[in-house]
Image 1 (cartoon, rainbow, N blue to C red):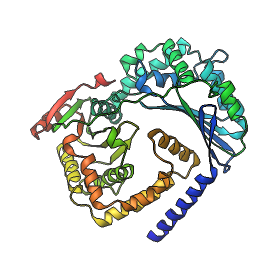
Image 2: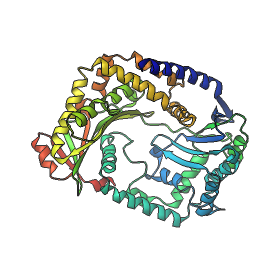
Image 3: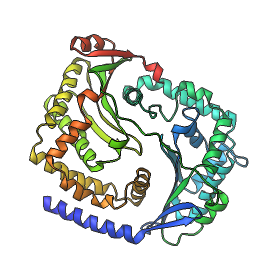
Length: 453
């Protein structure tokens, strides 16, 4: 079985390299950069517009996300219903993704319907009026959703943990906004933000479509107005500084009707850390908590029955990164679970079995290539590589890089990423756990969940 997997990886690697060389084209439409993956496997297209700006530069948190979400709220020509009817008639899939550092808007469908679908999207970007009635409805739904987070303990814990673990950086606030910031956003703010994205912010177009697909360039230039002739700007991202050491304390969030305790442990990577060791970071985090065979799952679930699931991650953006561990447990086992997590991390910094390490390497190489199987997923990888400044060739260097990692390197990386003294630790659950944690020797800082909504 090992030989079959190895053969598959080698063949897939060679095929993918040829695929990239033969099918990836780059163009300059004026000053507008275009990356085109010519793929004729199916008569479909995917177009993604990358905007070199995200939630970080907005005046009120949530403005950029709301601006994109409400593109279909109504224009000078069409109502929301008419817009949705047109896009549904042509079977178009569309949507935006907003991060602190950048934003994207994607459109996909059948090649034969590309012209009316793309023209409608361009019309939205140029002519959305953001009717006050529609915007108020959406804001009301968003506020209701935030208030209802108290009933979704996992989502609430992750939201609060992000803000607390990143509070020393400019990236802590949720991109979707909060109850207080949503109230401040007006239709005028959305108009202003849309105008900035249309006329001022640098863009890059990523296309997956069969070779010879016509009309895209003209529609983007004439209907969207993105002809590459207007000067655009790239937003400068602030660099994240080295994190400070943290005391062995726990942030505690009390919520009603909690028969389980949510646990979040992690920290951020500064600008220097996030821009290197991508493969090593992935390997280290996956070994800790990347599936059923990971050490956290084996210790917490299989051997001790403390939880149903546990995961770990190490992710990078352009100017910062995040590492973390997510799990939950019964109220009665909160102290034991925290102690086991600490012991697991410390043990892996001293000893990693050769057999387990070899298995992880093969697993990573196989799953990585499957993740690139779809050409749409492939082009999204290219977009992200461009954003963080990585070379496309690194996609195919991944298997060799994984093979080159030594056990000592992995142990050192686990120690660096998951050092217990630098982690922010959060527990969300019943208030009676405060005394339990204090009795176990933890310093506990109680925070109210409604301050993070």
